[in-house]
Image (cartoon, rainbow, N blue to C red; front, side, top):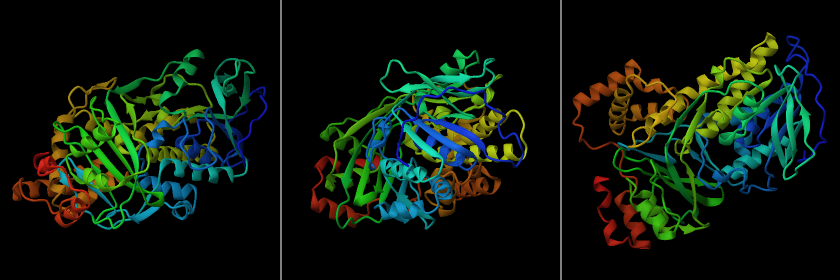
Length: 507
């Protein structure tokens, strides 16, 4: 189904949501925002609503290209393992389609190397990894969504606010007009409205205009800046990995970087820094930033790789959690999801996968509402979603708070936060020497297990026993990210500057 504009419509008073248990499907759902969170929400809504309309301010490209409405798409993205499972559940066969369109596929446990703040973690086989750019992934998801009967994607739409019943107790649609127009405002009627407009969501303002309280917020000034570039993967790449993630080393080295294999034999390379440390976007500065990462692999790789794009920078100085679940009063038929609720520090790669989890939350609450129609659907969904984002938000903010000058506002002080961080450091140090501990960490990283799995009695005992039994300075099991033979081969292709030798020994 092609994108199309619909005529502006008046808004009748909406009927009850899922009025008959197990009865006919509901009427019309409107999703505001056509990024990943909105597209996945639309997919689950299409199971139970006769019509689903996605309103997007931007225009969608004909192919898998960058669009201005997703400026971060020029930077490396990854679906975590849990995100891939959900995507395949919502769009069966999509992993195969992505592979057919050139996406990289490999073993999730061995294709990507993780260099933690404590060093390289040992890899082990486990699950399929699909490496794909954000642009190709969104394009394929949009393509799949358009094939579903009753789903319409409308572009070039400015949403101005919410339409409500006369007493403002119920949202009955959205007020909108064509982008760039100064008149022609109209209303698109809806039985349910989902806000998926991301970090810059206007939902707090819309609610305030209707006389409702604004959701409380937690904010953290992560001060993240990053820069990215596409490269051609070198022929005959000598390393034993296809991609690598190098974390910063708190509190001394705020630089992080990664190489992700994506479609058509390309590498997507992103380097970044925390707490106001931002990488340059000029050629020499970009390379020098990579050279100062805690591990030399990213620098050595891109020295010999062919650049395919300009270097582009981006900054997300503040991240935010909106507590919609804590609203004392709320309007019926309106919910928020994705980054409109929780916008994480993107360096941890959680965003798209958490949006996929949010889609499952929406699906679960809709199914429950069909089985047992009752008031309060909106609050139940927001509380369920709050539970889903709590752990990844805590992980991301906990890591951000390791850097000097980073502050978390609007949240109560977390008892034992310092102790948790010290245990986390201990865990990672031992995980570099223990494949079983590394596997627990990978499960948490991929949203397959909660962070509490790292501190379960069995795991904590293993960490403590290894700590007591082994000298903390002992060599990790995992070898260097670039073994000597691979490093020598790379430097034979393009000799490294003399000052690079030995630089990373104490990083």
